[in-house]
Image: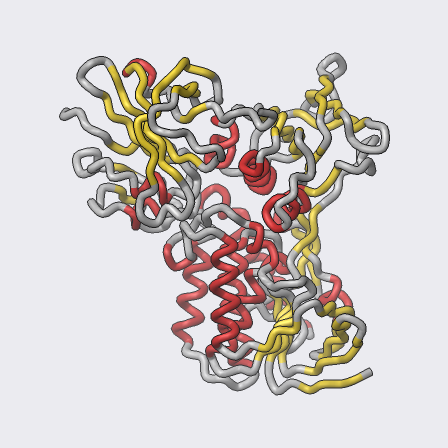
Length: 366
Length: 142
């Protein structure tokens, strides 16, 4: 297998965290290779056609896909080398094995930043394997990247921000959304996102679940029901809806295989989507010179992923000897912390602090 | 209170967001620090320009203008096709998407920085001004 040695930083994943990490490190003088498996970098940003929350420093009010365009052109200007359509299949110390089209080779770098994102959770119910049942993110890819409607009549399962936003975007694309079901007695997403689809006439059923999807060859109808406090369906509450698409927006799980493989220490944090690599507040894992940023480090939002990417980029650049003013770390930390305030952010701030503490404990023991 | 068009902010939760504050040329909207504070509108300062309506990522700002003749105008952000045209008769809806009856489209425009989002102004009886927050979309089957 061909080998390549990089005096610099290899970033895995070209979503918001990876792009920002690559850009930040390159701007501080590091040689950076950004590896991304898709046809074009940008990750989830490419299909986020809505305006972002946050403040001006977080690019609030800018639509996600425009942020991707800006970051990609900034990365190019800063000299980041992009390896597109390249899949990283292993990580040992600071060496990546990757497959670019048909060529496998390994890339040894001085530091690695893993920004691999997260994958959508599935939900098991009778009929869940029928064509027409898909992740909400998949439906969003259909409409916003490929400009194809996955179906005409959609049931959205999950009332978090992903479910609410994708429901709205499906309406924008011309689909009918027959409703949103959420198993919890309340919506975990923002009320302003819920309000957008309510005004558009979409019913939202909390304390409800999907029981079964049925159809010959593909989804033709779905049965939902109210559930009790123990999530058991209430007999007699079933109702059947004619739909051709069922979208699942039932959470995300960090895509952390490479970190597991490399030997990073993990902990389980349900509030952040599952097992996450322990990391410092500079995004360093328990392995020297291996950093994480974005959803791999705990599922949050694109805006937090951008800031974690900036911090990882600064830290990795500093670790390989580039001069990085301490004030830049402080500013990035401040921007990040400001996104983790309020009733939606407090829990994430708490859990992140615990991860950092456990990272420190790990360091002491070793 | 003088009767004129002013913003109505319906942002009920403490979420990290402040583009309304930076969009307002009159400094009429205050979020402050931390940015999870809910926005506060100084109605005396608001000129009804609509920049905040277009800037709000949550599409949670509207404008209401109560006229003297029991009529009112409600302005809301709109991001669906086909676009309503001035002069169209449309069905006004409340926050739950329920019909409030017909309304006339008075204007449709895009303030600076709207980036695709339209503002639509409809005229309807003043009694409905506190309820009307949008219009029924044409069905996708048509």
